[in-house]
Length: 95
Image 1 (spheres, helix red, strand yellow):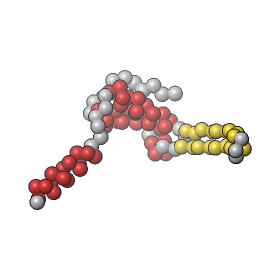
Image 2 (cartoon, rainbow, N blue to C red):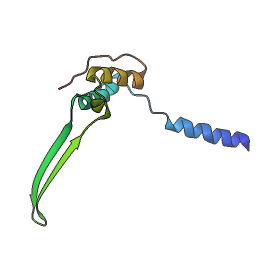
Image 3 (cartoon, helix red, strand yellow):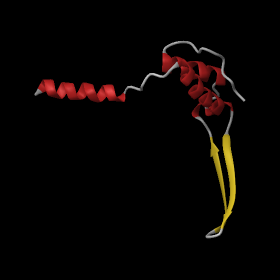
Image 4 (tube, one colour):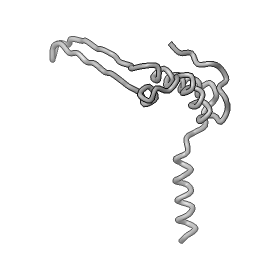
């Protein structure tokens, strides 16, 4: 019984581990996180439809890295290292 319980526990823990990503995928994912660390993000939408009439929307986002004042390049480098276990293959392409 203990062996079965231990096997189920280990299988559950293995399912929680993130799937490995390629260095290029990590660079793309981490660039998004680094861009969010540069400042607030947002979007505005305006529309009209024949059923409900005019509509408008506003979204503002603040990342925890921005709030803590972290350097976007540092955010990028640590993110890539956490995901791949290696240094970034290229510098970040930030806007």
